[in-house]
Length: 188
Length: 65
Image 1 (cartoon, rainbow over the protein chains, first blue to last red):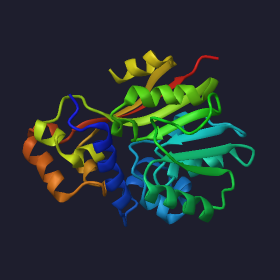
Image 2: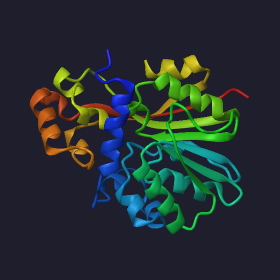
Image 3: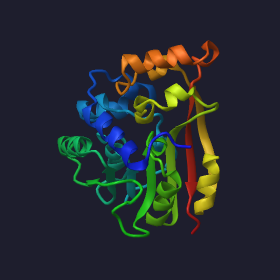
Image 4: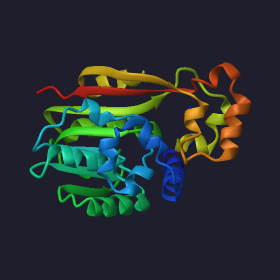
């Protein structure tokens, strides 16, 4: 039984991610190579909050369109944009207005013209059917109360033959009730 | 359980390509968590779980052509 209703969970997550500040690149440095981080704006590197490196397994090719579900400040979106090149496109989607603003600013700083940042929910992706080649996400699916709905949306927007690569957190054993009932646990 | 959700919506070639334990030391690196929440984890989780609270996994899958 979920401890939070859908809208309640969304508000908690929006607040947590909207207010997050970081002065350390330690999370990014756990997953990305120095040469990947060196070419990105500093703000993107500081605000990496993912739990893996989904692009490492996405086998991106030039000219492809990539959708990053829950893009945050944009680290994977910007790396995807570089990987697909000017004939491709990287689309970041995030529900948190502050993260959308940061991702747009970071794309501009990185001078990547093939980046589009959209504000919206991963349970209702504002893109047409069969419009992207690859869907990625990093530490985001676990934040949704409707995971099957998110996956169905990923399926809908992928072209036939399209690929998905998601890094996320899973529980091996249940957490104590006190932890599960904590809004802070939901945000992570 | 999670992999079944991928299968149920129609994805094929579903693979877990990376999997690693995430302990309290790593969770503490994320700026999302308050000192109070980290303390709650430390107090309520048995010590043997501190080194592996959750797992980080990377899943790949494809939509059949």
